[in-house]
Amino acid sequence: MAYDKNISPVGWYVVSYLLRFVELADKDNENPEKRFLAWENTVLVKARNLDEAYTKGAKIARAETKQYRGGPSGVPVRWIFEGVTTILPIYEKLADGAEIMWGEHAPRKLKTLRRMVKKKGDFAQ
Image (cartoon, rainbow, N blue to C red):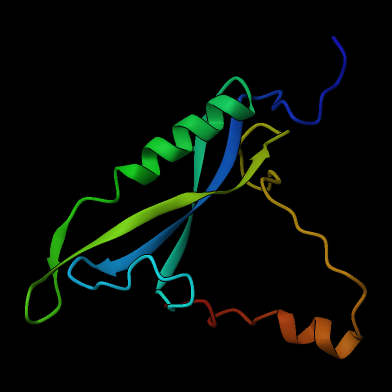
């Protein structure tokens, strides 16, 4: 069988999706110029290919979009699923040290690269 970089040999994919927060009574929720709070969540899914990974990731995302009451005044709000942003096949068995994500950066100055990294203890939210 030929190698295909789009197929995970271990059956796992990293899927990221975008959710947008809205107050349901706001008339500007579809205004493309309005600013919205958004979360990009990343999950692991077991799948046979990119399309199945997409379907599973979207299903997980849509499960996060139920209406609820938010804030001190309990206004009706919800997260809206905007779509999938990334799907990456995982090429190694899941274990300590297995690479599951990567990103390429255009050439940058050393001082800029060093500003990108954080020290231990800087990751708490």
